[in-house]
Image 1 (cartoon, rainbow, N blue to C red):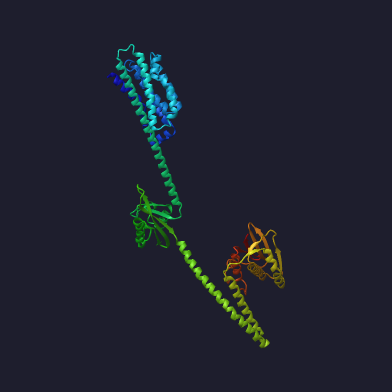
Image 2 (cartoon, helix red, strand yellow):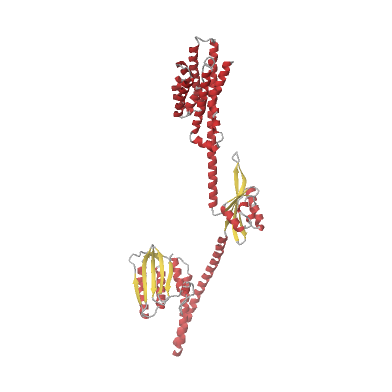
Amino acid sequence: MVALKDILLQVLLAGSAVFLIPLLYLGLSKQQVMRMDHAGKVNFSFAATSVISMLLCLIFALSVGSETVPISLSIIPVTLAILYCKAHIGAALSILHILFYFLLAHPYDLYGFLLHTGILLYPIVWLSAKRFKHNTCSRKMNTVIALITAELAVASLLWVVYVYPDTTYSYLHLILSALGYTVGALAAGGMSQLWLDRMGRYRGMEQQLSEEHHHYISETEKLHQILNAVPLSIATVDVEGKVVFVNELMKQTAKEQLPCTSAHNLIGQHASQFVEQEQADKMEHSIQQAVVHGEVSVLTVRYGSHVFLSRTVPIYAYAAKGSKEVSGAMITIQDVTELEMLRSELDNVDRLSLVGQMAASITHEVRNPMAVVRGFLQLMQEKSPESLNHYYRIVMEELDRANSIINDFLSLAQNRIAEKEESQLHDIIHELSPLLWADANLRGQSIELMLAHNVPKLHLNAKEIKQVVLNLARNGMEAMTEKGVLTLETRMVDDRVELCVHDTGPGIPPVKQEKLFEPFYTTKAKGTGLGLSMCLSIVERHNGTITVESEEGQGTTFKVAFQC
């Protein structure tokens, strides 16, 4: 009975290395325990408890006498530490095991040293430790059982051989005691090994769960950032139509359109608050269509002067068996007020374009009878007295002026795509030079050409560009008095070709400069007001720009820029 109690007590002391580990983590949070686990401090914890267990086993075995407790089970925590911990920790425990024996055993001898330290089997334990950490749970258990059985068998054999000649115990008592120590050691080692594996799996599952939780939080935060960055007002509702989530743009929209509703109390309210009261039923119906039938619905709603496009789509939740069921709906709201205004303006532009086409057709038809009238006036002039020539000349000048207005209007109203080809701007200017010089000589003016050498060819419609150059040049000449100088200059500015037409006239006041390109606006006494409008239309068809720079008393410069 005494031997059985001693065996059970040593079994408890040998197995206490594993069960003492939780005591080292008292008062620590899970995060701190996980950080210690990542830092490898769990091995140090197991090593510390193994030292305590080993020391208790040695003290108990050596203090009560070898007759009562002849075998120490301190080899069990040392063996488990060598197998589970890193090599330097196992080496440190092996050395401590030997040192503790010499500190506690008085007197000590070779028999006691071999019996209580199990040093004979250290090489086998160290060789097994290399592959132990990579084995499965069952193989680890087999390794632990084999090593402990070998250790206890060697210790029992040493004890029997040493004490049997002088002992008063029977041979059966010795065998039963040896078997008792062996079975107890196997129980302590096996339970410790199972507990260590369970703790390892638990830590692995807890770490995996923590990583999954961190990944979930990270993905949720990423999703929130994406929803907040989307240029749409987004809200999610549950099956009852109550708001569960709103993004930042929805909060801002609610703050602007619903002054009585703050951003924080949107959650839990019904989504029908996003629309006016008379349209709340339509919003509720669209949510029900999404939640009950899984249908996508689009609704145009108005709130005050704003127009919103609302789209409601179902949100599905996946069940355990892979089936999916509707768990709510997502509402996207887009402010289309400006789009509606642009659409309305586009309709007006289309109507104005139609009116312009009709006006162009009418003016084109008017020109034909005017030509007939002018022809008959010329016949009548030939048969009339010379005293009436003055009146005929006035009438025909006015007819020519009306015809000129019609021609300019038709040029402005046409909206056809200009046929372009690679042309050199200088060639167009040189072709117009004789005509321009003739006009300048009649007015007592001169022309200067300042053409750059590095101007590349451009995609131009030569006929239309001639109209632009001729119109700008004649405007400049008409603005100047005698001795005036008209300068035509070309130059490269970045990746653009600029044509500058500069005159030395009186200049244009700033107030009039703003209206120069408006149709039928003119600063000349007999001008039609369509010349510059026609130039602007032609330049824009060439994807260019035309600007004016003028100071009173300093002349005027028109700049036409073409993209290379």
